[in-house]
Image (tube, rainbow over all chains, first blue to last red; front, side, top):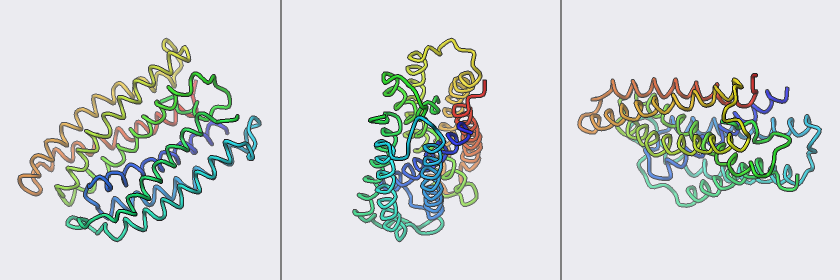
Length: 136
Length: 156
């Protein structure tokens, strides 16, 4: 059970990082294809729900940890911050990504890019907290 | 890909940094493969030169550096854990898929580079190279997801 939960938690975390990678490509000036944006948005939704859901399940399942441990609360706060930043980044990126081949060449709003990079930092911080588990 | 240890209940502090690098490298590797696969597959039917270029750049500037980080950190964490000469199947799966994977990555990158070069000259040209790269990248992505499963569940 533990290993299955861990695998699903890792898979969800991979989905989050994949979203960050796709949006980073857009932010670096890659072709903003609407289908790629849709893939990124679906991965963000799956990753967001999966990391928090399976993460809390793991914390409840394992005797070593409690849901109110400092590093778990820090991770939940980072997840919430990352989710809101991700929502703002997606809202900013969506109007400039257009369907099919030719679209998506308009300038990227600076605020959307900023939200994306801040979201990327939040995801990186989450990974650091998961591995170092400060206070555990 | 010893990602399972990332949230393992007990682990010496000295393992944290190499493990962080290994997990980060593995996550970036799979994520950049997803980007490359999506771009090359979307370009498959449409023949979009921009998407082929994106797939190529994702392989060259994303997948290759991520593989190096993941593999170097794997060596580091395995030596810390004393698993270098281990016969455990999950360790074997990790090293085997990583080491054969780099060959596939290099071939896929060359194919995508050729496709990007030709599609720059004429839209739709070089589609065969792009499709070949898309197939290789997709197969590698599936292989690495199985590897993540092996690292997490640690079959004996």
